[in-house]
Image (cartoon, rainbow, N blue to C red; front, top):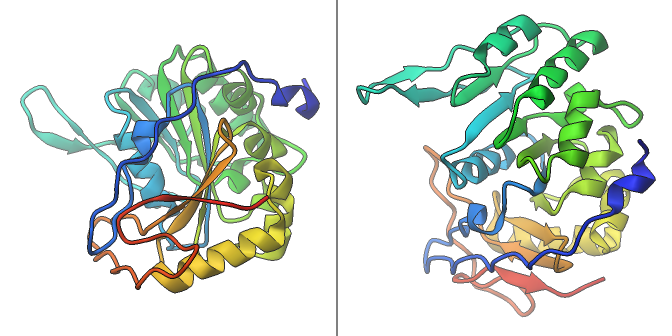
Length: 276
């Protein structure tokens, strides 16, 4: 298998347009409505700028479906609803054996106890061997892959997960430090403000068909107008780049939008940007 072969896709219907945003404060659309279980998603952003919350929104927007969360930093927590309606915490699996035993649950939370390659290969092979549909949310892709290596099971989910509906949501701080399969195969790419470093934008540029300097300028203008948690949303099927207002964060107030300027996202829509 090679990266050159990863780019072929059958024709599909365009994604739905996002819903209109609220008036004030600005709110993000419900992105799960335009994303299918057969799609792959990449989210990039700095620490604390909303990328994990966006991943959570995307996963919640596609329920009910099994959710498998690979949490290399061990910073997430989840609860599940029992038959009697009570909520209980999901106990994280920490070894491939514990992961295999947990795979029957509606939410599977995996915090790797080891980052050696054989352990990661075994864990992702267990995930790939599990029948779909499900969502695999990798909360920091650079911790479980590198530019030259990706666990075979994870790569199979990315490259061959369309038909069995094994969606991958890959989250990262550094676009240049993850395996290129995430960039080449993602139907949806989200860039949180502020802009990533120029090396990362140059690494991504060809995948979104926009120059790195254009991406940097767009993200800078969006950040200035709408503040943290706003983002660009690239849809590969339509080659459309959308400017989106801040996402609502659990437990945080969403910043109100600034007055829109020409060519910027307004306070009640998620607009398509021009540019190439």
